[in-house]
Image (cartoon, rainbow, N blue to C red; front, side, top):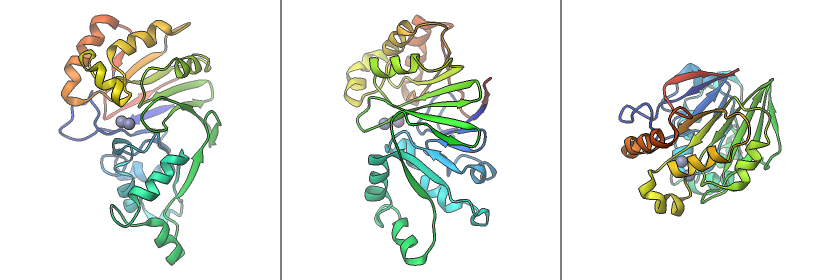
Length: 257
Ligand SMILES: [Zn+2]
Ligand SMILES: [Zn+2]
């Protein structure tokens, strides 16, 4: 399995993330924060399935531009998989003729189809060619999924956005042997109060995650760290967890086996 982690933008350091998009095997996107702006056009045209963790702007912002720029001669209608409430929010608050054209209305009027929306169900696996994706309920301010992605014997988890919760840690721990976990760590410890209000993780929570883990620790790749707080987050993680984690490098292709 290979995963392209798309950069957030020129103003964002490579190990920080303002907007989230990962592309698996050039086919499946996890989140669309920068899918339609920073992913190369050839890569965008090869993506046919998009899995959205939740409806917050940093995870969906570039979805309209992805749909707009897509080569229509491909005759491959992209499928957007998300929690029912996320799909509903996109239709109600985003594709509503105020923020962006109402794609559903245009489809009905013109007999076109830009994309299809599919509601995901917790822990119900979807197969996309040789890849199986299982949504895992996280604990955030809106319904949010992490994803356990499996190709043959390779399994990688994408965990963002969430606060620490015993439930998803135990569920993840029961998953087949994990090669890697992309794990969020958004705020430094001094902003634990803000992490709790907005339901994100701090280095203290990451330590808890690693301490609770049973068996061999998978490769831990820290993502979703706010660019302006990145130095603090990295320092706190290095102080308590040196050797047990790595910061994400956006603009890079990861290979897992
Ligand atoms: Zn969020
Ligand atoms: Zn986010």
